[in-house]
Amino acid sequence: MPVIERLAAIFDKVFGVEADEFSPDLTPEDVLRWDSLGHMTLIMDLEDEFGVHFEVDEITEMTSAGRIIEILQAKGVTD
Image (cartoon, rainbow, N blue to C red; front, side, top):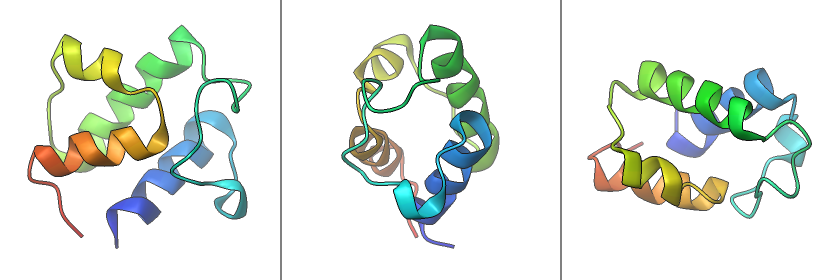
């Protein structure tokens, strides 16, 4: 499954964002439940799903769904 689809599934699970509403342009301002607690839940689910570990600076750089994809790709995660 492509990274973007896996990420969309995580956004649905964590934030209730349905697949047809998901976009790389999504930011915390667009997603009601994407607050500090939601962000940490997102991080844990990303680490579990993709088998990676994020450093603090990477976590703070995750300001949009698209940026998350870029960070995952930099860690070697591909489709």
